[in-house]
Length: 241
Ligand code: F6R
Image (cartoon, rainbow, N blue to C red):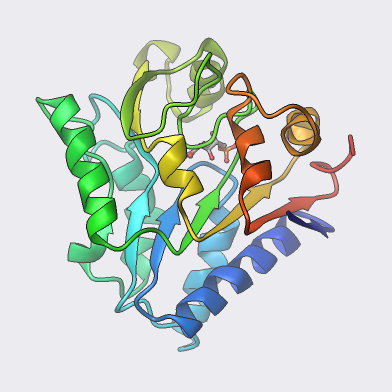
């Protein structure tokens, strides 16, 4: 495990963007595992800036997103499809056919989960997985549980996650209560994992995830076992360490 402390959110984002950018420069046809949420916004913004300057080329990159809400169409403003297009994909030269997110409107969700796993293995596997962490320790939407779920699956979101996601919706009623997420095995099979964390509200869970027991009750704790795991946090996120 490698830990890098950034002075603030902007520095964290720049450091993360540097690692993603190096990955794409060294292997133009990289498979990037991507996350949504507020944490990676600065990273995507920085990558867009470098793309506009001509420093990075995404034309051969494949992206595999971690998760999607069930019931939201790809055009819904709060869907992760929409988020990724608005905040990243629409501003770079990634090929539309190389962009992958689970379909939260699929009628056969079990099949959708199986197909998503098959798609990931068809790409040859994820080269670099970008992760955030939930305040309850979730990664992707792998919520605290009695067992690690290995593969892509449907998950009922915890009250804490629903509450935390309310900030993006006008009404708590509208926040989806379930999602499709890739599983822990898929995340752990990524060749490299980069987790970014900012803010004081993540400090306690980050400390427990990095130095506490490895347990499905805190899904991010499994990352301690990954052979190429990097964490970049700002000062607030590391304030409990
Ligand atoms: C989203 C995802 C989630 C977020 C986590 C943190 O694709 O995978 O695990 O990374 O909920 O969200 P933010 O960054 O909004 O604090």
